[in-house]
Image (cartoon, rainbow, N blue to C red; front, side):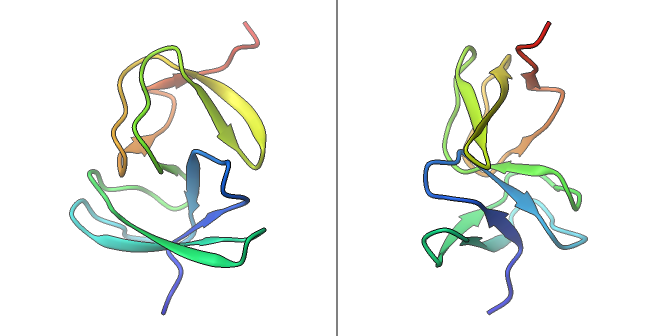
Length: 94
């Protein structure tokens, strides 16, 4: 089994894509590093390498956790399997 995205720990809400060419409708496999287990997800968008995929639904105002760290606030609804990036998440720093 090949790994398409990485998750630091089960509490994280996103996975980071680690392969090129992931397309909408594709069933992908993620590895949760801390717990050493895998999860599956169906992508709703094409997601470039290095970008994030939502592991559950998010509503505006929700906090996004990646690598056990708050990386920002959701500004538009995000569904499980969608591309999570600057178009739907903003920093809380300013």
